[in-house]
Image 1 (cartoon, rainbow, N blue to C red):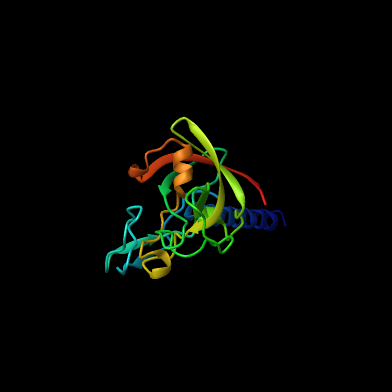
Image 2 (spheres, one colour; image 1 turned 135 degrees about the vertical axis):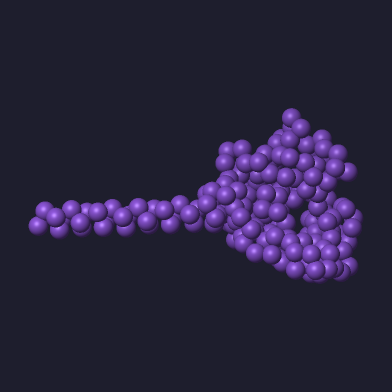
Length: 196
């Protein structure tokens, strides 16, 4: 009987250990919350009529572009790359913003977040604090930087975004005192509260 209990205890221990190992492995692969976020697939490129007002990276036929369903963990000071985007109709932002199905003036402080951070619209309407160049600004989340889909008309024939992008209007760049000709700048951001 003592041997049976010992064997049962070892079996239970091994099951718990294997379950924990499997869970840790899933987190490393990334599900948007913890661990490293790795590419979930690759999108074959297709070129088209790519509006170039903010010097976007346009798709090339046949090139493979990584897709991400997750983003790095959100912290009190999340590292990201700020990119420049117009949310106005007919500009490089493509269609209307996903959160409100509207276009936004380049004078508005608005942003789009990579798919994992956008979190199925959970951050719509939230104001995030963006810091760079010794300055900070609050901007409203109105759209998704699609990290999965791209290379089509809806996405201005641009590839899927990386998993660590805050795509910002010119007003955000101006408020941070950044040179828009750079196109990409390292920043940190913090998610604030939803403001209606």
